[in-house]
Image (cartoon, rainbow, N blue to C red; front, side):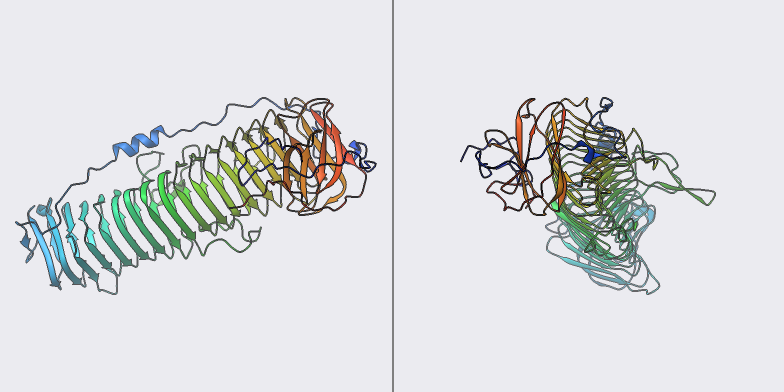
Length: 621
């Protein structure tokens, strides 16, 4: 056995291996001549003879404005010794009228009232069981609730018509300590007209009809464990920040798990509010049983770290199709819609170039009825580990999608990845789709739009698509990286499809698909490409292997469906050299490179043959 020459990254997605040696003395009479006439494609005006415009300015990461706002909105968490009740605490007997320390303990069957002069008061919950048919705590001044270490505290609103448990009327609420707080509310759990800041390591459990925790300013959580069950938003604020060692579990019926919403009178885009920022070492589990999203922000979502499990609207359907796609409900992570009112009329702000999702790291287990990651503007994936199952798009951006790093496994989707500009600069992207795998679609809805681009600069990309493998309403640029496409069998789709052409300047790629819509790269490509058309189908499950004259395997792929087209390129291809395409252990055709695009075919009937002993480009976990 001759030594295998590996030209692709050897990881689970893309693998090159040694295949069975070809028999140099075997009969090659079944290797036919080229049949360019068989490649006629009315939709392909290039056919390897046209040229493609140079790559426009590539998309760039733009996160500085978001980072500046996040830094400016950082709270300092007060440090308290909560191991014992403050020695000077006053046991509550009447309205809190000053900024002293108070203690609540034992059974209390009346409303706790904090007047405006009680601003600055620290209220220690020391094993209290507070029950009230009104607002259990009616707060009129900024206060701090301290959950005493080792205690469990209950606050219950009993009025069936709906009452909030902890209600801050024009008051900020700070919660500190490491005790336990259990809230049962017939309306909202904790609500404030201003900011809510939670620090330390509290355990908070909320069962409510409306919002679990709602701030009409910033909701800022830095530590603790939370379990929230509600019909509406679990966590809501004009901005939501989650930091430190924070563990959150939510289940919502009609609304979102985490929701950041601008004020109704905001009619211009601003980064100041409407965002979700998460950098936690803990886990966040979000479940919506109705139409709500897991995380939804009006302006941007910025995530640095966290262990996320998100299931929306019952999770991904068993099979994503045109009948299940575009239902518009149950996205896992969404950014970008500012709604505002003028004279009681509702408007939506059109700022698609401002809305952003940026994820730097973390792990994500997503099962979404609708889209997995959805930005009405830009979407940046710099890192992270993703497993995504969806009923519609797994990853969707209206404008730019940039993948810099991370490991992304899209296991179920209608369309895998969609944006106007899709740029892959690194990482691993594996896509399984019942329609297009990677789709550059026009914001304007135009069938042909030069603003649409798929740009592969680096990284490892695998696509298994029953529609087009890669489809651009504009251009496709393959500049580097490793790309494998298990494309469609249908002659109405292609492994690689573009309106304005494909330019190949580098990288390794192998694309298998139908013959009816084959589109070969442009003649001003700078790396050699070989296209092969089989006269009859290559069976599903066949290992397709490309080898050089020394029997070194260059690239290989196990077919997901039956195909008649194989197209590949590699920096190792040289003009005048002959290369051999195998299906199983059967030589399908040999091709001698005569120019940038070499098209060959065979007139024989495809033979069988088992999978040789090499690796393959099919993904596995």
